[in-house]
Image 1: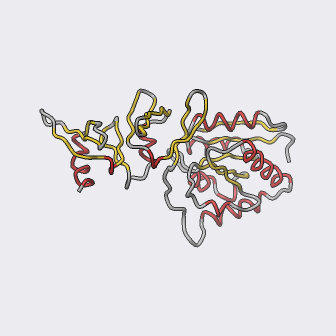
Image 2 (image 1 turned 90 degrees about the vertical axis):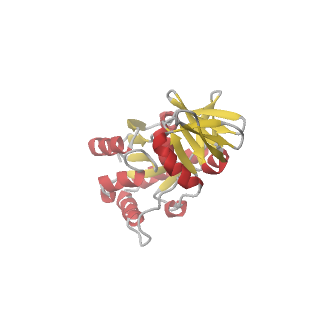
Image 3 (image 1 turned 90 degrees about the horizontal axis):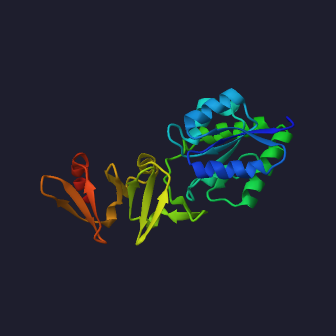
Length: 256
């Protein structure tokens, strides 16, 4: 094994990347050689730099973590630690000594455990066994993994990271570079684009009614028609949000 463990961090969430990079910076003999914010960037970094280890987010724009592995070729992937925000994800598939996973938000101890396992795998030259497991994971008898949706959203509040359960989110609005999660009377800012959030949320539960608003369908009380032909929804708490004309018909169908 090379004297320095060369690592690529791939995650579309800035705070998540920074946390991994900060933790890795404390480790001796470890160097982060690239940081990727999308699946495409991850593929490029892995092909160009051939790192020893990759921290790979499962759900990213462009390409998911599994699609990154498929693009590289499972037999050519470095040792990989998957990172996921999904509690319900099929984590059992990763519970082997060679391939590990981290569920956001993870603590320092869990990170250290995963890194130690990866180091051991590399030191014992077991990368081939790891890649065989990845091949089996991607092409198993059950087929490719089913699409998973967020059940928790990490947010920064007063300098601390906390998690908002998606089940408690009533609606989401755009606010400049941020999105705002509305949970009862509380509001949490998250640095995510509305498009990114929309893709990560269960479409059976949430619907984007406007470029600036996503609502939980069951929270909608009534569809309103305003003067001039514009539309809006009133939620059960009295909140009114605009509805795009292009989305009105589909929304009516969703509301039954």
